[in-house]
Length: 155
Image 1 (cartoon, rainbow, N blue to C red):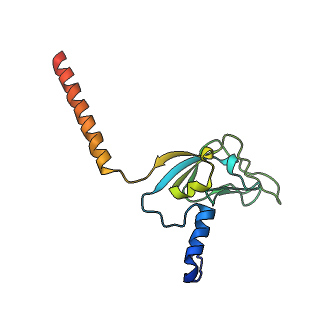
Image 2 (cartoon, rainbow, N blue to C red):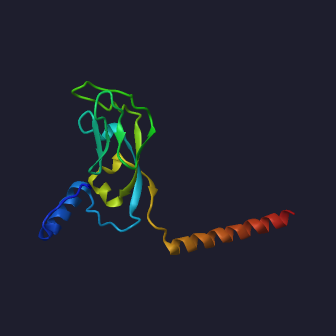
């Protein structure tokens, strides 16, 4: 069974507005409007055993002797997390200052709820602009022609 929200269709506008306010997105972004960001885990702790970014849980330690679980699309790329942390009643992630995670496939609109200084965009998965690609190709071909001419002159 999948988790789902059910609401009266007449409330759709209010529900979407609330989703945008809380999560920065209502799930209607166009395909390809996704980004990958890096964040310092310690900067996004909610309590001792949970971290959130852009309205979603990104990491949790469910028990003192349990490993930290990362959400789908979240990967620890710097630092180390201890295998256990906290007490039986109050488990802790213990991210430290060096724990950095990469959050993939994040809707760009979700970033609106975060402080711009709390993340770094490392990949922009927007579809390429065909006109920009043609212009870049023309510049590169012109440069290759220049290099070919220089090489011919030295032969």
